[in-house]
Length: 56
Image (tube, rainbow, N blue to C red; front, side, top):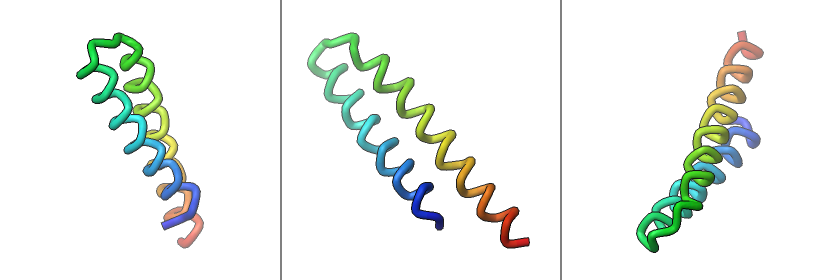
């Protein structure tokens, strides 16, 4: 798996954890963390698909 995809997945997991913590504390700022998790998830899929098509 490409390094960019791994880093995007790590960022996605951290954003999900931050969103959970924010919502548990009653903070609506967690919505931004959810959006960031979606963005990084899409980035990870992009890098994975790009690596697969480059291989053949």
